[in-house]
Image 1 (cartoon, one colour):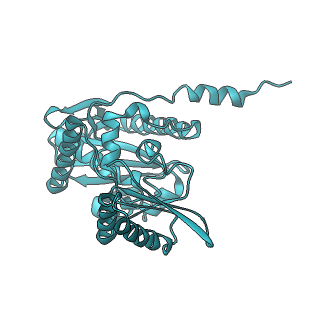
Image 2 (cartoon, rainbow, N blue to C red):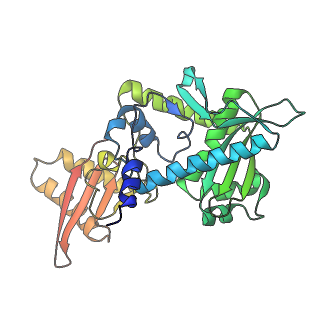
Image 3 (cartoon, helix red, strand yellow):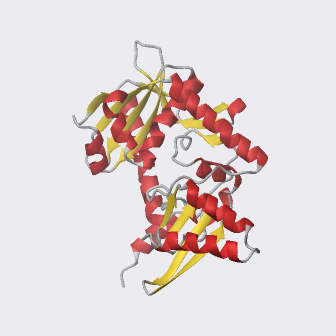
Length: 310
């Protein structure tokens, strides 16, 4: 019988799946969609759901592409320096690891940059002219289409701040074809200030042992979050959770809680809340600090109302 090389391959890849304590705001994450997730990174990293081996293979392949891009640039005469240099801004508890700083002789100025590998369909959807150099303004809307793409500008912006340089670069390689695109990202001080303020808000939550409010449910953000089972344990394995904002219903829920032991008045408000819930098609609804769940069918719908952690 021939040996099973596949099992050996994935068993080795699985050993690369690790999690580490995080005591700072990482430049690579600071542009993420959810401040609550970023706070969990600092305070509850050990509760993160570990990614699977397939995703680890994608991460490892990204490192291979990064190494290839930097090697070819160095061979072409570009000075590729400060690879994986640690950058730190202690005042705001921000750190980063810049992939490289690029110097093109005879210019002596070094530009911090990051290498990103992308699937062909993502790359093609962003770089409409194909390989070449792009200004950030040309492709900015495309980088807003996916949660992980939104992080890239923030990452390069932090590197520019920490290196005191007014321009950074993204080098994006198409994993299907090897085509390379360069995105020049000028330092936008207004945007940079928003990142610093975000870091300070997270630092405050960490110091005070509090959490930011949950964002409105986003399947691509929340559904894939490594802290889903920590943030919303009732969501895991159940019907999709919909976040709503309705101040009048929230007020009824708060009044209902205050009147829980008062008989008729409580029953009146309870019936109003449950009638509202039954009239909606969602099975699970979050309003502020309240979770409303429905079970059963059209002939008999049971509504459960409970307060969830803030």
